[in-house]
Image (cartoon, rainbow, N blue to C red; front, side, top):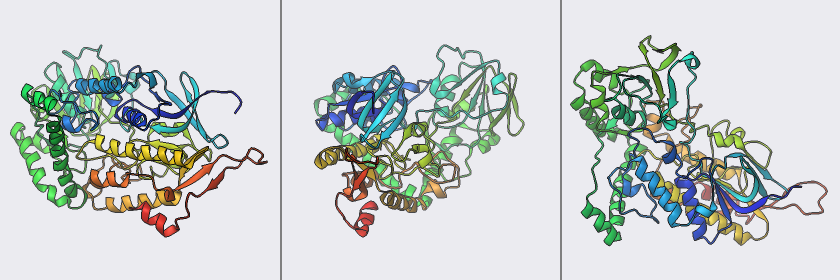
Length: 519
């Protein structure tokens, strides 16, 4: 390779829940030769980046935390951004991860070296190499900004919800809010009382359920501190309720009709104007797009300084914003709540595998991985919150911990193999796993509910959501099945051609391999 670089056993990319969780798990496995590469100047991932007014989680606090790091002091049943970010800082300190974390280290490119069996990682602060890469950049990390004619000539302020400009004072301003997703329904009621005029551009109305949020009493927190099993029981109850809901989303979407009636009642309570209610009523089955939680969104929309435009933004003419239906409004600021690059992860352009192609090129027809973790042609590369690991109704921390189990066993298998070795997911195993996932996806509300959502990629395929329970995913990722991988060994030093010797760990047979892949 020529120039020598610092070498580590594992490089973790990102320091949100996935990256910090991976760091803790590596230490629990006795692996201390690792770094966490973070492009920003502090840890926290999406809970650092999203600091917009009203930012909070829509998963109950006791379920939105690591099982190995319970927090008895959550102040509310649904935590705000500042409390979740503080929790992640606490995890970094408690598990002594700071010495492993490298802030302001943006990963620019990762290339697999077939001869040395390791990843060469180019960062904004220099280059290093690693035997294994764990990519925990997350699907909600890179904001998606639509291309709008005339936007560059807008004389006012423009920013995305995840890049909030806290130096800009919205008081007395005319604000155009673009989008009606999870961020927008929190922003709207937070800024409505202080702006002069708020124009909400809505392409598709969301289903919104009441947010049953309350302060957690001092006695509850004392009980969870003194008797930790009470906090665990609370978490278990929250988990169990959501597991029972899964079948309605994945197998029997018609059962969601009752939930739909509750959402309609939530709207009717606050929205008395029939014309506005018609604008805000979705035409698709509840659950097809993410169900949103808010008790303040509808009341804010009923205020006299708010206009709802039931159409998307298509053009900006000076300070005039224009919707697809021709509606015009004057604005001093445009805020985009237009989501993230989820099915076209930007990090995929920065990963070059064994065959010299990027992960983005490998995934040009849609993201595919084995058990949400590994991709064919990218040895010793894993992703946390990979394809088809998202959830529509429960906590992503549960999925992250399942993937950490898989990562831990992956490292154990490499140790058992001994010497310089790598694991590369077999295309047949990846294909078998994804055929099974997509077959199960056919009956889900996400595919049959009559909507277009960010769960679907450009080809209309759902490469985002897991079509089952978190228990099922935990079972599917409890360990690595070597029959699903090729074991890659370093080429002999005297080989005339630079070819990689590949061997199979055990010849399990095609039937066994396929059966295991879809287990």
